[in-house]
Amino acid sequence: MSSCGVALPRAPLDFPPRASLRVERVELHFTSLSRLYPSLLSRLLIMSDYEEEMDVDAPSKVQFTSENASGKKRTAADLPVEAQDNLPWVEKYRPSSLEDVSGHQDILATINRFIEANRLPHLLLYGPPGTGKTSTVLALARRIYGEKNMRQMVLELNASDDRGIDVVREQIKTFASTKQIFSMAPQSGNSGMAGFKLIVLDEADAMTATAQMALRRIMERYTANTRFCIIANYTHKLSPALLSRCTRFRFSPLKEADIRSLVDQVIEKEQVRIQPEAVDSLVALSKGDMRRALNVLQACHASSIPLPMRGAPNAPRPEPETITNTTIYDCIAAPHPSDIQEIMSTILSTSDVTSCLNTVNTLKANKGLALADILSALVDQLQRLEVPAQTRITWLEGLAEIEWRLSGGGSEAVQTGGLVGVVRNGCELMGDKGIPLV
Image 1 (cartoon, rainbow, N blue to C red):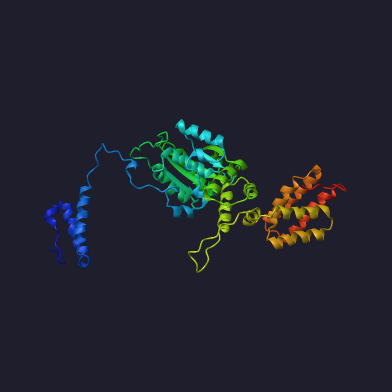
Image 2: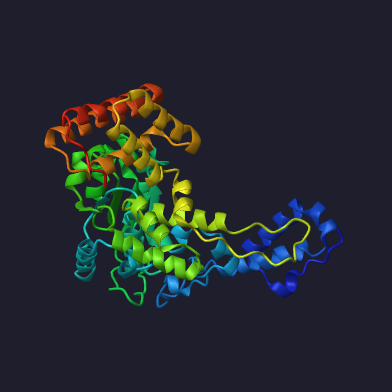
């Protein structure tokens, strides 16, 4: 009987000496708590006895694999319906296998050959955003290790957040230097190649120069049990020593056919009401960026769903509105083609600079357009005109200079006048010849 009046079942449990000492220590520390919870000490005794039994070594015939674990990392397909509805479509429709990745068939075929031959090198995937670099790496890891083993065999870091040398010395080096203790059971659908770990460094071009210098030695030292996959947007920001240690693949902007294929699938599955012309505009404005296309489509779809009426929660919700061309351009805040056509017809047809400035400034004020967006759209339209080479050169050189000044913080009012002047100078080179509009 303890001092708190709780009977301690020592005899029936038959504790070893070390367990008895542990129990006596528990009694001294938790006497006050046992008055509030009479069953506390008995539970601790049972846990102590369990710990004593677990001190023995596991039999040598037991093979530890991640298959024995009951826990499983949920994917988007395993989430409840409510959770899937709240997911961004970029994550919800992220490809789960290499076969589902859009475009870049030659790169995917080469990576598949690396996996089948069990000769995966260090990889460097670079290119513009939204072209499938991260999706390819995640699908590659899922192909090699399977869904259950990814968490323990793959280290994924975003170098934009963790970009210093401390991350290289602590997290990356610790993960790369440790070897696998127990053999992993081969996953169905892969080649059974799970003998090395995979370190994914996303946006590695944001890493400091010191961190890149430290990383190159780690890549050489732990190649036997670790592979590195570096993802970047710009290779000129990476150390030449890192570039020479990796097999490089450039992910170019996706073709419109590849973007349209996935966009059509999302429209069908999410039951989006959208006009065919709006789909064409969405694909064209994405400019090879799949992430941008899906984000804009989801934003337009969310804005087309009417909100429920206040005070009438059970009232039937109205049908979603149809997404139009104007909806797409308003969501992206890009100038509508009709606005650009109005600017071009005014500048190309009249020599009155004041009238041209008034047209541009009025559209900027009424539509809330930025001069940089007007400039980009205007360049696309001017390149389609059939004009002499000298006129085209004058336009492109002048507009490029204006874009550079805007990026450096130049005044929009001053650069608007410069834009009108550059286009008019090109027209003056043609003399009395008219410029046909397209």
